[in-house]
Image (cartoon, rainbow, N blue to C red; front, side, top):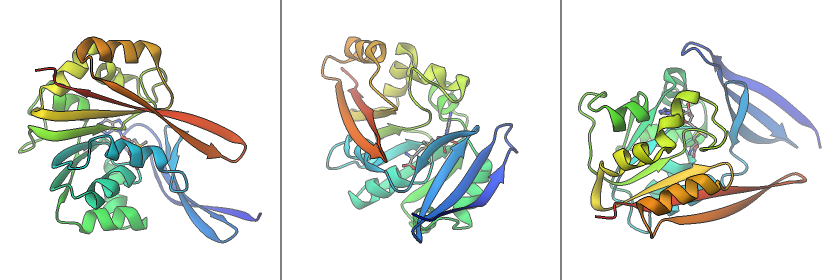
Length: 227
Ligand SMILES: C[S@@+](CC[C@H](N)C(=O)[O-])C[C@H]1O[C@@H](n2cnc3c(N)ncnc32)[C@H](O)[C@@H]1O
C-alpha cells in the first residue's frame, strides 16, 4: 500500500526531540508521536491508551492525566463523563501544537471546557508539590502514561514515578476511593510485585495490539490507597 509521511511539527526546545508526524496509508491519515527519537504512539492503535482511561472505572470524576501524548486517554475519559481533567505535559511545544489544533483529537481536547492543560513535570507535581501554581488534588483518579514503563524509560528522570516511594506519594493525591492507573509497554514482574505490596487488590491487565505482523502485549496496572 502507498505510504507518504509528513512532519507536522518538530522541536528540541526542551532539550529532547519531540515530533508530530502524519502518515497517509492508502490515503488514510495516521498521526504519530516521536519522543527522543523513539516512536511513542500513533492514532491507529489506541486500545491501550483507551484501556488506561477505562481502568479508572465507570465514573472517573475529576482526573489527573500525565502526559498529553496524542490525547486518546483524555478523550476516552471525556466520553466516560469525567467532570474535569487536569493534564500535565512535560513538552511545551506539544502543548502549543495541541492549542494550534494540529491533530483533530488534540483540537477537540483543547476546545472542551472540562480540560485544563498544564506545562510541567508530573513527577515534581506529585512528589514536591506545589510546583504548578493552583494545581493540586485530591483527584478521583490519576492516569500515568508518561514513559514506556518501569523497565524501559525514554526519560531516566521518570524513574521515581515507578518506585514504591513514588507510587505511595502519588496515592497520597487521591480521594479515599480514588484509583491510580499506570500504562506500561509490557508486563513487569518486579513492578507488579511492588504494587501488590502496596495494595493487595492491585490489578494487572494485558492489552494485545497488532501492528502489522507484530503483536504487542501492553500492561495496565491499577492501585488504590489501601486506607
Ligand atoms: C505516550 S505519550 C501519552 C499518550 C496518551 N496516553 C494518549 O492517549 O495519547 C507520553 C507523554 O508523556 C509526556 N511526558 C513524559 N514525561 C513526563 C513527565 N515527567 N511529566 C509530564 N509529561 C511527561 C511526553 O512528553 C508525552 O507527551
